[in-house]
Image (tube, rainbow, N blue to C red):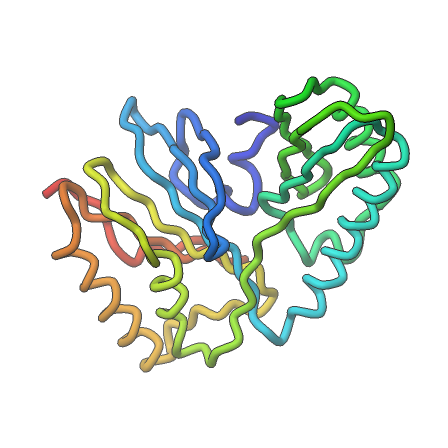
Length: 233
């Protein structure tokens, strides 16, 4: 993956990786990557989320993106999937230009053969455009994965459990990232109940580890906090 993806709001505060490959999305809105650091591959699981009070902003940006893909569909031939990886919601609510993104999508689509995938970058938008089949008319399906956090801040640990649902600890290093897209971050050092619950669920990860204890981060507009340091057992 290129196009400066490590400068996106998903990786901007993370340790620098030599290479990042996308593996897919599970039913819990968790995106999976393989990241290489110092010749050591690691599994990277990321969950984008926003607090419920700010959902209206995400809904607005999502609508902008859907309109852009719909407009692009009228100028392409073939069926495509536009899979959004990440976006700076609070930037795009002010500066997003639907026509510009539509143009980027159309220009990218023209270079794709059936089965091909290419990254699309526009402003803070990072997405994959996948051409599925040739056709005489155009269709672009929009996909995204932003979880809405509806609980009180002290229950932030529930998102870590969502991140790990059905997860089998591998024999390689693992990085777990909660990526908070909220303008008012959910993580709060001064929320004692939240910190106690986070500590409990993170401590429970250690005996379940196979060969490496996972690295656990929570990231928001204030930067990234390492909640658990990854080490080899």
